[in-house]
Image 1 (tube, helix red, strand yellow):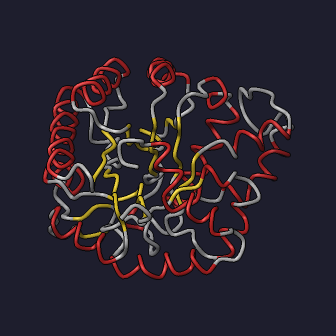
Image 2 (cartoon, rainbow, N blue to C red; image 1 turned 120 degrees about the vertical axis):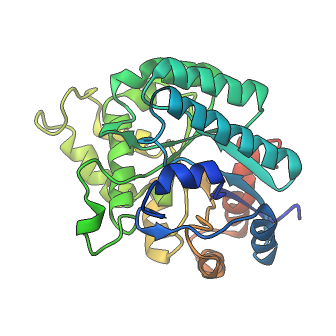
Image 3 (cartoon, one colour; image 1 turned 135 degrees about the vertical axis):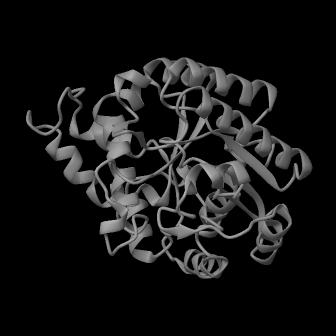
Amino acid sequence: MSDAIIDVHTHPLLPAYVRALTEESGSADGVTLSPWSAEQHIEVMDQHGIDVGILSQPALAEHLVGSEGQAIARQINEELAALVAQYPSRFGAFAVVPMDDMDAAIAEMTYALDVLKLDGLGVSTHRGGKYLGEPEYDPWFEEMNRRGVTLFVHPVAPDYFEIEKSRINVSVLEFMFDSTRMVTNLVLSGTKQRFDQINIISTHGGGTIPYLAHRISIAAQMSWAYRDSAKLSYDEILAALGSFYYDLTAATSAAALDAIRHLVPVERLLMGFDFPLMPKETIAPAIEAFSAYPGFNEDEKYKIMRGNAACLFPRLG
């Protein structure tokens, strides 16, 4: 399976994760979570030519609070490590860390990477409306930068969003806007450039970043556009927006790929399918749309489907 896909965006529904997310409602962001097993997950991978899935449980920012949250993070990371140990050629994993306490975040990261040997970190775009790029995260970012960590960042509902009042599920639009806010904040604050040894993966094709990159770069030149701006030029902002890794989860249409390929180098594009939170029936159409896209040659398609991830995660390549 040396030419098969590496999927960087897939989620195991581990018991501790499901308990933390669903609480009393029985659903996560309005989506009912079905029973999950590693064997069923691998069966779906095999049906679609997916060699490796890198597992993540990032949507926990609001639940990992205090000592109880630290205990949940440790439990999830040990469960992820056990899955990787059981299926080392099929699964990688991004560790979760508490985002309310930078000392705790660094301590859990150290344990997850040095002891459990997980492949990177998987976190949320924000916690309590504090997006990545805010100064309070700097101590953690400094340590990630020193280590050259790969950081997978998944959107969550924005702080103001009331799920029960919206007819449109939060994942349809708000997740896209939330990734856009996170990427923009990291760039315009100068955080992405200061900590340039962190390999940051933004999901779902970067939300609306490919479409809005030009507007963001122009508007940021205005004094009113961004509080405490790092005062970057138009070209510097465009380059920084294109310096993230972007997975193509739900972003393999010709329109999406036309936008992203003019911003992001081919070497920074990755494949993802969001299974099982996106049903398995969505995987084949995504692969077919990507394979049929005329804007990438076969070598570039290989890089996106496997080669780029193999460079980021040599153990899995």
